[in-house]
Length: 233
Image (cartoon, rainbow, N blue to C red; front, side, top):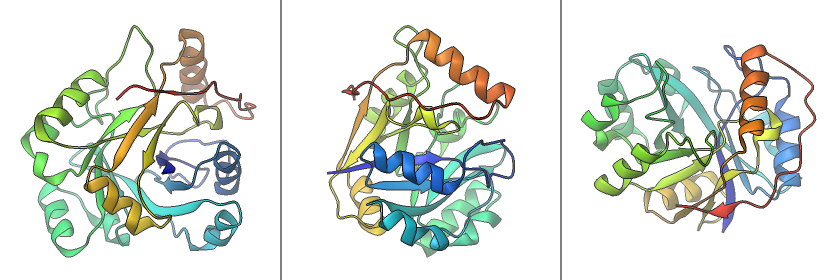
């Protein structure tokens, strides 16, 4: 089983202010035992090639990705070509899927944000290979519940993602994938449902601290070692 994070941003992000580099992200992921990591900047798919050797030396496989804004909503596109940067509609996404064999994930689909999918997901379930179980939740407030119901109703696998904007977010929610350690094998295994979500809720102080840091653009936060996660999905 490969420990995987499929939704992470770095300082290369053109929209959000991220206080760490790709190498910092790889180092932290390796320290926590991750075997694979997708870099998913907003509307920009970086070439992970220059970082691939560095990551491999730390036991981490990099997966090319993007958090693309499509018709105003966020969609994770993994292991596609850089044609993802040109996708502007869900019809164009359907055509991309016919040309290439990548992985399409619905991120935070029912979270209270203008960028969340909501009805776009329910109207076009055929376009999505998996649904995200997002790490930003507490025991008493969890917007993942409708996503879990959707996934069960439509036979979609769920993947645990941190939506990493601060290194301290790594480690509370992630995926375990039954696959070889390469991008195509990992994406294929997820499409086939050979994936398990491991997660634990954040405490309210941790959730507030993280959201305050992200909203305020704080930098230089020292990552705290996460407590062991527990299987929840």
